Length: 212
Image (tube, rainbow, N blue to C red; front, side, top):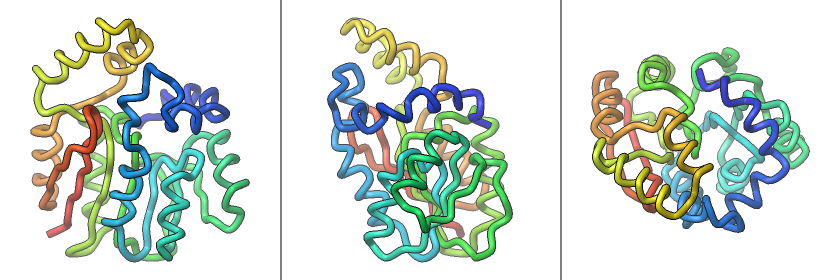
């Protein structure tokens, strides 16, 4: 359920914002257009928003500025502490994509950035099925995450980052559960969603899935 990566985020909490700002050359292309990516997710969001993987609260800030009501779910205590310090009034829950406390209010949009790949494809389906039961007709899921057009594109990216000597990034790409657009499309459609994909940089796609 992604919790095997908590130690990574406990260590990353202090330097996360430096990485996403593009100061880490190895991950610069992954986070290219970071502000636009967050804004794209927020722009597509409506109503009461459930955010998974709040991190330090960068997407949260844009959602709140838009006037949306946000409930955050974050498994890393270090990250929760960062977000809570930034947004003292934010409802912030200890949980993950699959296991999280029961919510008091209905949800119209479920959002996440740079996090859904922490689930295996099997776990992704469990999560999407759960969201299908949580959401009503025309409610939506809006994710931004690294994915690939197909298996060949994934292998080509592995070779590309390896040739640049980006061995930490290569390890991430090979050990976390990155998937392909066809797999994601099948999972969403199978669970009652109409889904569209928009590529935002060489790694990240905007995923908009509307409950039907």
